[in-house]
Image (cartoon, rainbow, N blue to C red):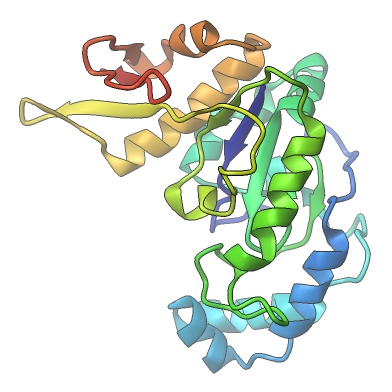
Length: 253
């Protein structure tokens, strides 16, 4: 089973790490290629391109200028410990023991606008580049065009026959997968909460639930749909009644 999650906009390169080792991103050369193009953009252009504040644009301009050609210990941090958002709060990778860190490295994959596809312990440098950013790379008119075949082919090469892909990524990031050429069934869990007497997907809760589901699957060394359905973290449970498609199991609370 491979578990897909999105990255986070917020980064934390200061929190003490449970382990010091990190691996090299599979698409490090491509990340450098994209960075060389980003380096040419002014802070003002980055502000407009990414729809961010002037302060954030200045920060990311500096990050682009300081981006190193190789993964260096000083500037890099394992991706799963660098991203700092709701999904990663739910995942809580900092509390995994050594055995489960290895399991996470085997099962979990992080989609990225700059790095394409990351293993959790791949060393990354500080960056901001969302997959949906309208940024041309050579003859590719956007990041989806640039990454889709590369990321899908890589996933196919890592998977054995009969393995499942669990999509816990956002629509923006899962759009970087070519589902027509992906050689695996895709399970896309949904998480709903009661609000004003109705079940709804509430973004903040759903993001954290995706992280909790990823953690559940790692803890259980999951391989099957039944393993996915056994998820009960955070008060959620599988709802057979709300599930209209077995490939999109619904969890409610």
